[in-house]
Length: 96
Length: 400
Image 1: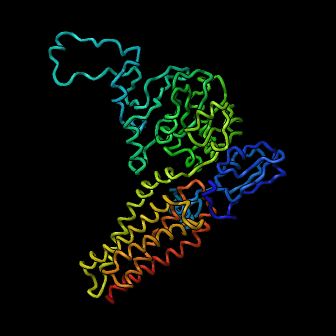
Image 2: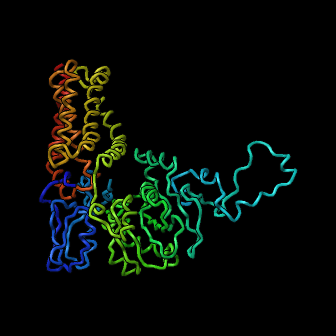
Image 3: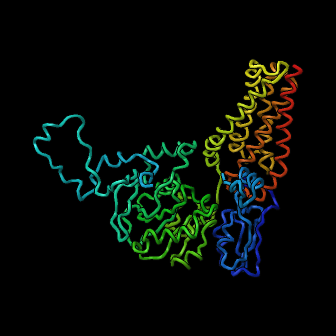
């Protein structure tokens, strides 16, 4: 996937190495190789490869990872601009 | 829901031969002489399967049923039929795509035993087909979740392929009565919606993360349920991009009808207030420019994505748009004036840039934060280009 790189320095991904217990789950579930286990702790080695799918945070047993997951779809984002993320009287943003 | 259990109608094919349905299939149909003599028309069809139930249809991919402690489990074919392929193609074109779910629950391949692996998947038929075709000569259980007919990754992103649904489906299906072990193999991409720890805590089943792609499942199992790095990474090959094009286009059919109507109405405005002749002759030119924008943004961008300059998709779309716009200008330079050509150029480029940007939703690597960032910059530019295009187009009619 090195041929496919998206905008840099935008991902909301962050890792608290203090809280990491070194289970390695994030390295397994990440589809883009963003994490690597180093010295029995996870490390973010390719933050710009992150697409914010949220798999790592969902599966981190010590809540050491945080990321705002979402859908990278233009039509959906336009709807959230108009009616908000959680919807209003005009309805809820429908994903593509 | 029952009659809708598989968006598919090829039962006849699977019941053309009933030799594998042992208990009743070989029983000769009781007939007396009178009935034989009175017979007319076509010969009778095959006897009903012993698994037939009033109000239910048996799916074409079920070749037999296996009796288990949790009731009969369909044994599924690992080879896709012609009709499976035909339905996959039409789903790819957006036809029948919204009701392309199969019934959730337990299925099996081969002759699985209590210690056979359990593969968990989504109930989108394209997903189910992609999995089962990889399972020939494998004895396995398949736990199909109700993901509302959506593929694994998208369903996980929408919390449909979720911790809740895994736990719920284990319970409802009676999986614990069928297998002696307590282990599930989940597709890696479902990790977006499933917490392995919570599943273990609440159901007792351990989650093993399988490979991203179904075609790696055998090597994964052969390697002792270990995935190498390539099995863990998503890809976006030319063929993976090209199959997305028809459905991208199918989404555009409805808005295009309105846009074409607008194009022909705007093209008729001029010194005579409204000219039907102009609406037609100028409308054709504008429709061509619009079509070129669609081709450049929704076909060209996906096809040559990695070779287009820029990281932002709106830029990639603008690049292909400018190329397409150049061809439009070259084609129409003898029949349109400079104002009109400028308007058409802007139209093609803006449409292509927008559609290129819209393709971010179909790729496996664009982050929502990035998409939002580029949209904040790109949409005002696209809107301005579109607006300028309309103003120039209408204005040109008055100075023709």
